[in-house]
Image (cartoon, rainbow, N blue to C red; front, side):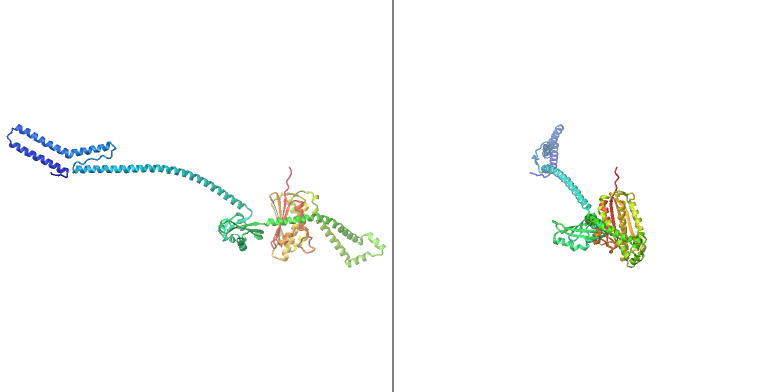
Length: 546
């Protein structure tokens, strides 16, 4: 049996076979003696049979496989049965087409399975994505809440930090935080005011560079960590704005820190020391007030008797009085000869010295009585400028001040910023206080001229202004100044730096008592040896009653 491997071979064989059969049939038909009509019908029949055979051959080898393939394709299109496959009827091109069709269906099925698998995976992924989205949404809300909480915490921390910085910068003490290398980690405004170093320049710099006051005490500061306790230095002096300030340095070692660190506190105790000295002076003066009153009355009686008796003796030997001449004649005494004798023996001089000493003692008693006159005062409104001008005019005509001016150029610098300021007081007492301060300033200037001889002229500054509800009077000079010991006792009664006989030591103590006790004010002094002195008097302003 002949085996054809291709459709074209089969078709070609069929056409050749039919053509040959037809030719043979026609040739046989021509050799037979049939009528033409019979030959025609036989030819038609033969041709029909040939075409029938060709049709059957074409149907079996081509149309049937094609129809089968179309049927299978429609079934695949109209049903969900993926197991249907086309049957391979022949081993030819149509058979190869069927195999390709079946392979295509297999690939489509495989792809469908892959698509379904991927769809399932996508669905699962979408479900997971939804879950993740919900979790993410919840997490985002939680994070948003945490961010809001953190922002509030950061805001509170910032406010608290600003509050702490405000507290630190508002403190009247200089605060400096340092690490173990003495580098500055914290610095407040008061530290800048004292040292003159800006905060930006001070941070991360060495303490002894930014705060020169600490330069001489570095080893002392390091001992704070060695001893692990607070250490304090008192009364460290530093000149600021032409004025000597006193400071206390306190160092605190910080605990519960990873590295060694400490806080240095620097307190300006200048006013505190002055206030303590003023309180001590006030207590001393107040305690002496009652004693001075009793002593003054007890001393005044014998002094008055001495002065009176000296005056009586001088009158009894005066030759110009008629009663003395008459008594001398009765006693046979020559008054001129007696006076000549008394003069030659310096008895009259002795009497004059007794009289002058008695008057000086009387003035001393009068000053002591100032301590007990508070209840007898008549306080009246006083224009401060008038008090100052009156005291200055009296000082300019004073003999002691004139002696200083005669040997040395002395100038007054007057600056009255509040010419209408009024205080309640005793005009003469306030005048006495200012006059005492001017005289002391002139004496200090003269002392500097004689001892140091380093100034070309003497200057007495008298400035007046208003601060809060007080009138401030400052009397300064460029005189010899005072050391700490002298300044501490300057307001004590009977304390004086003048030579014996040149002063009683009551001028400033009486002035202090007049201001503090009689006028409810304050009086203090700022002075350094060789730098002059400034006495400050603070008096409450007068408030008119409605």
